[in-house]
Amino acid sequence: MTVTNAIPYNPKSSKAEEFINHQEVLDTLRYAAENKNNVKLIDEILKKAAEKKGLSHREAAVLLECDIPEKNKEIFALAKKIKDEIYGNRIVLFAPLYLSNYCVNSCVYCPYHISNKHIPRKKLTQDEIRAEVIALQDMGHKRLALETGEDPVNNPIEYVLESIDTIYSIKHKNGAIRRVNVNIAATTVENYRKLKEAGIGTYILFQETYHKDSYEKLHPKGPKHDYAYHTEAMDRAMQGGIDDVGLGVLFGLELYKYEFAALLMHAEHLEAVFGVGPHTISVPRIRRADDIDPSAFDNGIDDDTFAKIVACIRIAVPYTGMIVSTRESKKVRERVLELGVSQISGGSRTSVGGYIHPEEDEGTEQFDVSDRRPLDEVVCWLMERGFTPSFCTACYREGRTGDRFMSLVKNGQILNCCHPNALITLKEYLVDYAWPRTKEVGDRFIAEELNRIPKEKVRHITENYLKEIENGKRDFRF
Image (cartoon, rainbow, N blue to C red; front, side, top):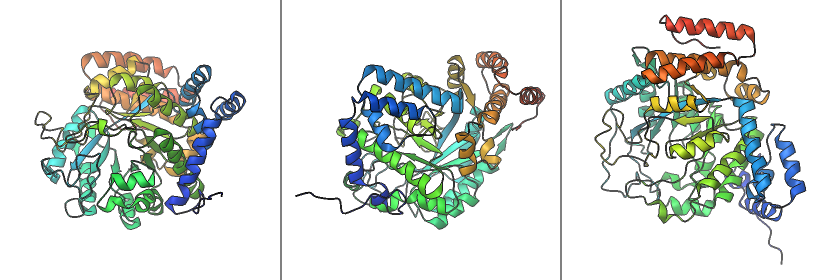
């Protein structure tokens, strides 16, 4: 007897179990396994991918499953080519800012879970937030990712909104936070509308795992237990006017091939319903933290598999920004920068109040940081590797978000403003914050990169902006 799936697959549906359809994921994985050595099909998929218009989740799953060494080399080379042609050599820098570790959920992989009675609970006051932001500004940061646990009493939406207003209000020396991205728990359309009105950049929410049964076991209690409400959050965010959203899974909780296919299905759903795919995709791996031992989860992935995932996401969703945080080591980050990553954090602290009191580790980190280098070392390292460190927030501030941003990316036009803007913000950093060696490396780097601006008029304007920055002016953008 043939058993059919009672729940249909429908990427345009508003229901989580229809647009992230379990049977469709299983069928995709079976299709990929059956075709992992199908050279003709793999060549057809790579030819399609080279057009930089993306792949379906099934096509991408075949590439991920492929174990032919020569074809894997082609996959990695194509990922690098696509990233270079769409985003160039720029790498956007940001830092997380943890406001509170109060949380009412019971996520078994996170030390903030409510049953953890020995972790010190902290919530920053607005004065403490000002101190943290000034410390971040003194590093040179212009873009933050705001983080907080889910607790309607200690971390209500009003607290988040007040904190955003505080962050944007702080002008310290030549420093200012120009974009606040927000990573908070799934909420209502009304609250997303409030976040939009507060001027946030991207709303980020990690799915953790798309496997419904695993999701419910990993989130046994608390509001996050509701799989549908969590998975449908991006739809509500879009309905609330937030047109830049960021997806991500926590690799290591479930089988990575399942997560990969479902993640791309989520991107396809957003594109199908709203005409705009995810602004960013993050690829964190589970890490040790307080009472969390990553070895307790048996779905961990090695560095080679991680690199393959990054490359295949870049090929499948060429327009999206890809984020790798300081969860990953310098060595791993160096590798995936070549395969499609376009945003990284630098000088990060994952504890509440960690920028002002980094030496007072009270066990409030959400996860252990692998890359502990200060921001300036990261900036210098990027330039020495041939990447342009970018603190740019121009698209967000010029209204180039959502479908307006995506149309520029998909048409290959974003480089006309992104490369000059990256150089302008890098110059600000060099003048205001850089250590002597980094400044020396940076000045040479900018001189060389100016020659790569194709339009003479744009190059001339950029050169004038750079001179104005030397003379004390700030915040130029195309």
